Image (cartoon, rainbow, N blue to C red; front, side):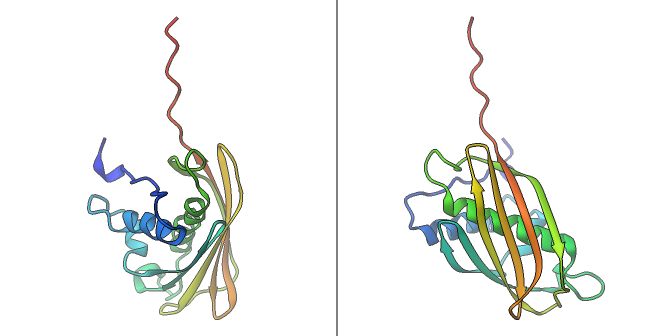
Length: 167
């Protein structure tokens, strides 16, 4: 398998906060992967708090995240929330439950206010519901105490197909 697309699993031996930070670090600092999603957050995201169903992050809205008008680009906002809401999944996982690969199934974005270049924002992410095959999360980008962007994010878990029967 191409090493650019191999994601290290969740290290359940670590305390909760360190587990989430380590998972995010493995993604952002992987020398084999330089995708735009890693580039968007690399060296610019700080973990504020972690609980089993919630994570909070802080980041600065840098120029590469902005549109020509100097505001956070909608696609960049979606990328930020796609990646950071996933950390609630990591925080909630346990061995054998929500601990396998996953991909986005649906992400619904609502843009309420512009976020200006240079602003420091808080990103609050929560697990709404999680099951054997699907998970639902929500996220908010908050500037100066005001909600600017919200999302609802669904992911589906990827499992190896069962071995074919040998009849």
